[in-house]
Length: 252
Image (cartoon, rainbow, N blue to C red):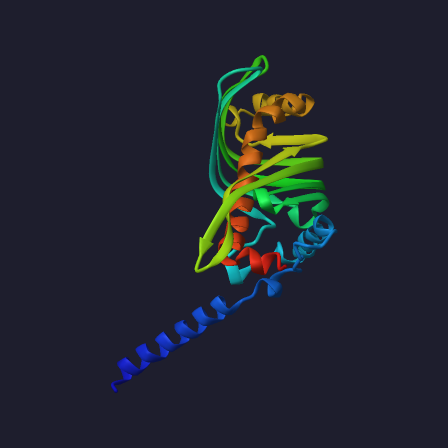
């Protein structure tokens, strides 16, 4: 065998070995399992989710899940044409930091109907990224593009995971239809650099105005936060449900 052929054979062996390692991973290797017959199933799942917090910063390489703290959304847009805040905005490379400190308060698992509801809270989370915005906030016009950051405190969130039964190779899987995450906050500070083409006076005035009227601003930017968090957590949940059958996730 030639040297080049030997190298190719060696690479193929390494790839096959790695693929086998990924395939062999078990649900119990990643998180605490909960028996579906457990009368305290909801509490068990709650503790299992809490146990995953330590993996948020490093991600879950076995499932090809990147870090969840910070989460990163490449691009998300909002077109809000009605109400006191009428804006068209795009956020790129939006980072969301703080979710590794999430507290899980309540979990409801309804396996027969393929639904899981989760309520959580955070002391804070912080976002940063690039923005492009144009429109009106209350009585003031707003326009600009550049870096932005936001800080949110006293955060409460609710996740609803819905799905349906999927059978593969005589095993039952949770075929996920959707995961929606709804975020409410007790206070928000939103700041955008380079508003009004870098006009410092107008930019400082608008940032102060947004801080003074944060409830109205957040109520309109909330869909961006909801969709950003939902998109990332939806991907994680789907990878788990696609990888492991219900018999493994919730043994009898």
